Length: 260
Image 1 (cartoon, rainbow, N blue to C red):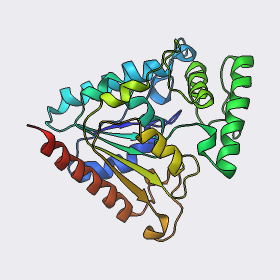
Image 2 (spheres, rainbow, N blue to C red):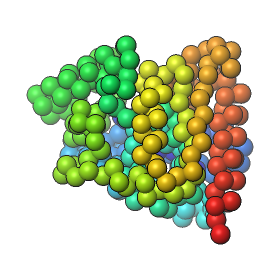
Image 3 (tube, rainbow, N blue to C red):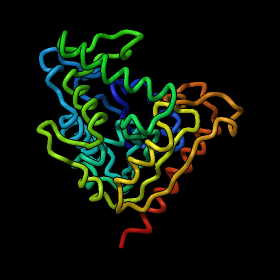
Image 4 (cartoon, rainbow, N blue to C red):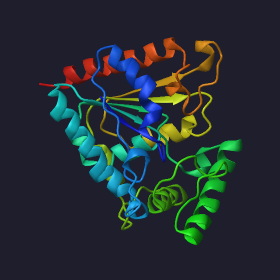
């Protein structure tokens, strides 16, 4: 199991849920994209693009998981932008199944209320700051962690144009349909960073994948907020973790049934 993390989110945030999965018998690997967390390199950080994350970092993590484990079944757990990057990554042909959690498209019209305002603010303010300073400073009004300014500008372009393109502007959306393994797409009912329409819009790109859809309803787990990152919190309901782990088990069964 390889965790593909969210935007500007160090792998550390995955550790509690990853540890839970390890206790259930899963082999788990987490990693940081270049310019994020333990992969920061001041000499090259601002030049890193989302192409680097998709074409270099994710395949390297998948290959390392294969090398270490020799497993016959290798799934990815892609959170948020992780689900966007997976469909563009060569690693899509090297995995057996994918669980996408709160993986969405960033097109403003797919959001409502506060979520849409947040998207518009980020696209305008982040662009101005990066163009002016060469990077996005960490603050309560930006992001809690530094990452490549070029990667952020590419992410903003995806949202503004409504098209996934590489750093040279080439449309890469046909790549998603090349993934044919089982996929489970999960939305979170109280997540305004990844509302259901935005999740569905991304899921639709994986057009040739046998797809299941699941919704995390906070009411089912005592009414506590889950939101965009709550699944990974150490105080997340264990019943929620158990349900997500059961979706992974079902993906493993689906993957086996598809093999000749």
